Image 1: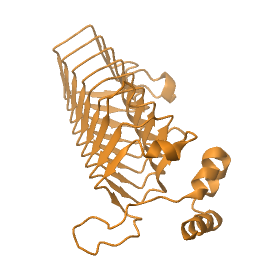
Image 2: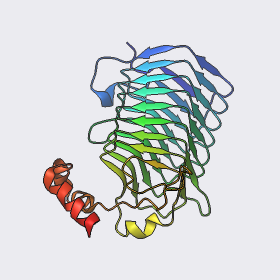
Image 3: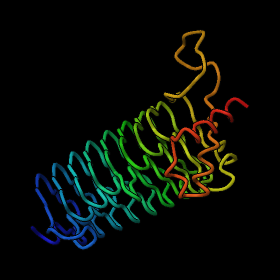
Image 4: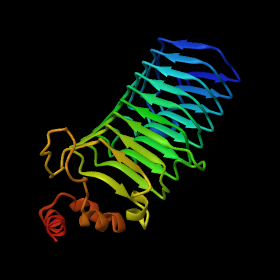
Length: 272
């Protein structure tokens, strides 16, 4: 029943462990933050429950570890801004508007987390905005509006964002790249049950697609063969989805996704 929970301001080398934080019964935007780090480094945030709050934020705060926390029914499970080399591992984030968002950050690790049911108009499991050098590994991103949303990331020249061993399942869009210029490396990930596996929101997306690296990923809609039984498809997996182009350019048409007419358009394009 607190407006704000725990606030670390220029406080480093602290431990915040096993707390239960709930905000007041207010609209989402005016609840106050459950946990906030501001210019605070090398802290351990572990085993906390932050439920019905607004955000957990880390601004200008570096090399913190967020481990085994539970976040539910809030806005941002964790929002990093100008916060480098933070570790987020073993957390469970359910029913939030956004799971973990990296904004203007460099470095960092996101691994072994479950991010589920980030739904609604802005629902997103993991977000990147002009960020670089992040490792995203062994996470489960399920039932979100967008599994991963990436905008101008990686941002720094010659940097990458690595996606390894993640499961993107039953999302509206598995991964959405907006205005991206390559540098995303995706290996050993699983894509299953997503309405749209991968989408490029910017024009010229088909050209940008080749600038990213895709290897050894599992696609549940792959239609090729594996005649030598090495576990790898004999042909590359290619997405032909004309209907996606329609609703990306005309957002109102998204209502008709997976309808028989749009499915027929996609079938005809693949056939052609």
